[in-house]
Length: 387
Image (cartoon, rainbow, N blue to C red; front, side):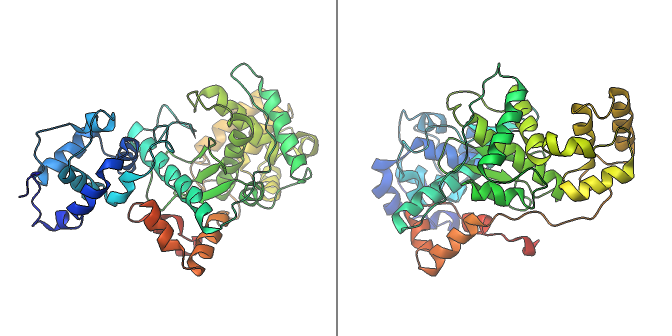
């Protein structure tokens, strides 16, 4: 037991050099401690209890006081935090002004009210680490994609019809025409958005996709657990809508219903332009016709049926009847619909950046400079053929 109350003979405490902790202590960042704790899904109390289990005395400042920036941890406490959270001590010495918000703030959440805060924190921290990684590449001569998207700022009182116009404007800006899209993720990446597939089994299944738009380049995280090609394409278009319409909302709470309604309207028009698809939509619930449209347009039958109703090709009563039948058939579950299953669209930009850094022998120096947590490289380097 040392003077800070840490049993340095225990293996978990030997992993972090207390001299290193002492050396970086003057530059300690409380915001980075909050981020690291969020990434592990721990509460302040849980972290404090884990520190006590490792022999760190409970005397002195609490975790809440440290995270509030009112005081700094002792070298022993910092070493214990590093071990428990599996982050190098150097991570906590990063700049304090680069992460001005909590891990799950400024994130556009599809299910804000039903996704636990702990899970939002873990997923939001993952996105923030990608943000840090991309920002760090500037010191290694890596050219990040330039954002090439129109900006159509929408607020709470704006009608969803403006979101439809924004989708049409985005299609025109990117030269996508008005027909079916071969790859939605590819279009987003070509426009300067960095897309990433969430690591297998890492996040709550309720997190289909989310985006952070307060950084350049914007980042969208796409789910993998449900493994549904049609739905994932709609998710990507939905998040792209947030980038186009909501990246100006730097001081508001995201995940509000009006934001999600606008992003949903954007995605529907982006994937199924009204002027082109309206003539193809049937006026009755014909499964064969909708299945053919699903294969052509790359969207789910449910999305097509909803589009038929919104464009007044399908009456309200027929829509309600169709929705009930699809539900009874189990079509609302992932891959529950009929049709050919296709592999998820895979992002390529971030993996190409990792490959470029690795080839130049700069990847591990960059990770060391940033002090990113254990396992981060494996998370962002996963390939679809490994699933």
